[in-house]
Length: 287
Image 1 (tube, rainbow, N blue to C red):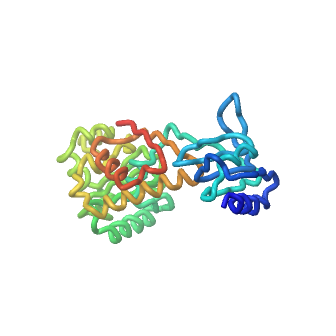
Image 2 (cartoon, rainbow, N blue to C red):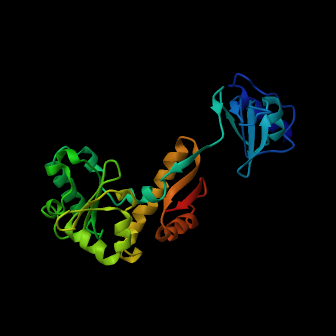
C-alpha cells in the first residue's frame, strides 16, 4: 500500500517545476500540503519558505519542498503553487464589516447614482415599494448638489414619502436627512440617541432639519428587534456573511470592527452560533 501511495504522489507532483521526491509515505500525514510556492512567513529568522503542511486547520510545517514529504499520506491533498506567492492572512485593524455590513442591507444604495431630485424620488419610491416589510425607508449616497438650497429639508422628503419614516445617509456617511415622520419617531423613542447625531436646527424655530454625524445612526436605537422583523434580521445575517466572504476572498482573515452597538451584540452572537465566524476572526469595539 505504501508503494502505491508514493507512486500516486509522484504522478500528482509531476507537473511542477520543483518536484520534491518521496521514497516513503510520510510519517506525519497532513490534511493538505502546498509546495513549490514562494511562502512569506513574517518570521525574521525564516522569511521565506517553499512549502507548508496543514492539519486540523493549523500549520504543522513550514520549510522546503523536500521536508514536506514527511507530511504527505494517502489522504493528503496536494497543491502545487507553481511558484506563486503564499502569505499569512491580512489583518484590517479599522473596518466596519459587521454593523455597517448589516445596516447596508436595509438601505438602498441607488442614491449614489442619483443626479437630481427626480432620480432621488424614483429611487426612494422604488425602495418603499419593494420593501413593505420594513418599518421605514432608508438609503445612502445622496448629495447636496441637487438638493434645493443645498441643505436637507424634512418637508421635501415629506412630499415624496409622507406616511413612513425616511432615513437617508449622505454619500460621505456624515450628513443625515430625515422626513417629519422619522424625526417625530426618533424624538419620541430615543431623544438621547438623536442628539448624539448632532442635529442641525433651524435658528428661528429650533426644529431639527438634518444631522451632522449620521454615521452613528442605528435603527436599533429606535426600533426593537421585533419591530424590525424577521425579514430584516435575515437580510442582516446574509449581509454579514457576504461581507466577510468578500474580505476572505482577498486574503483578509482578521478584522477589527470599530463600530458596534450594544443592541447589535445579540445579532452578532446569533451569527456566530450559526457558524458565521468559523472562517474569520473579528474583534469589535463598542461605540
